[in-house]
Amino acid sequence: GRDLNSVLADNLKSNPGIKWQYFSSEEGIFTVFPAHKFHCKGNYEHRSRPVYVSAVRPQSKHIVVMV
Image 1 (cartoon, one colour):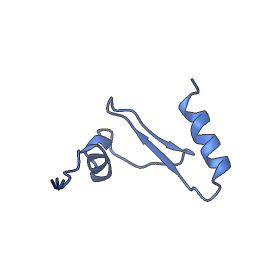
Image 2 (cartoon, rainbow, N blue to C red; image 1 turned 180 degrees about the vertical axis):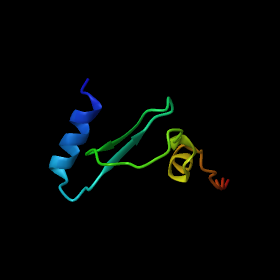
Image 3 (cartoon, rainbow, N blue to C red; image 1 turned 60 degrees about the vertical axis):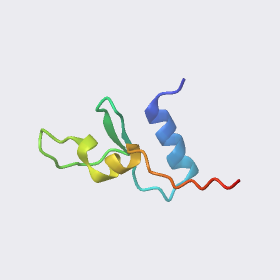
């Protein structure tokens, strides 16, 4: 397979309006493409950020079954 940076670079070429792309993994990998200065404390934990939590949390669904 292709490496993540190649995929992100191709996304940027195909969609020049994209400013940044963010990738967060369950294992704790976090990257921003293209790279830029990112001011954070040494203990930054992206998996506790609301955007990550809302993306991985299962959403409840309302299902109606009619017979």
